[in-house]
Image (cartoon, rainbow, N blue to C red; front, side, top):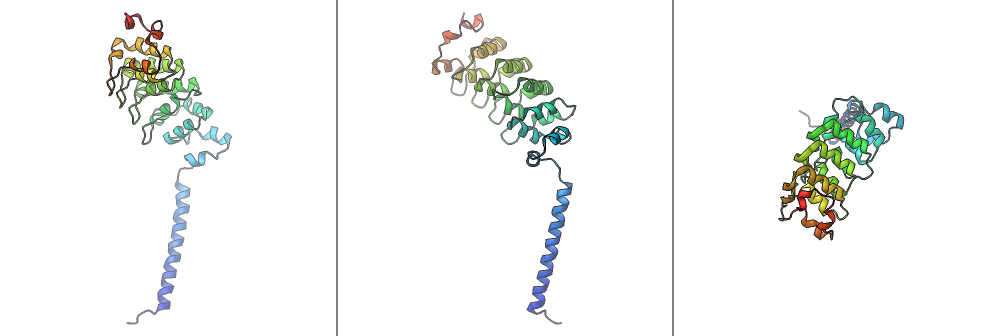
Length: 235
């Protein structure tokens, strides 16, 4: 039995390398043909007319989240007004941080109110009660960022007392966040208390602080709220 010399061995290695290269290219071409034609990356380079016509067919949770982060409101609105049966699933979609599409946009002061209301209408109370990794609901986030009273009213009307009484990982209710916010809206504070009742004022966070204790820290006197909260709060 003859032993192959060095030249034959090198030729064999070259042939195997060429076969491997051809196989790799075939695999790449096949993947390109079978992979979804619409991803976060490719979406950004689609012409405007293609975006509008294909937005329903090619949507998923990750793309909707991306559109919301980029404030591409017309495309978000177009999709939310479509008849796609997966809208609830896509709005609720979140990544590792637990932030869904509604979480992402509820704290932005320039988010169109109609888009917030569309998401809430589609997802209902189940969506409103969802929290991110830190236990924050849309109400926690909105109260901290001091968004419009109309947006917060929409969340409260849908989530009710169940939403207002929820505590995040720090033990804070949405009222805590509203009072911690140095430019907090007194109308928001009144709305939360009026909807949840006096027991909301008694909830203490992990530091043993009630929501109203933060008003003094923020150099806002409780007396400034006397005319804007229900009578039983200061009786």
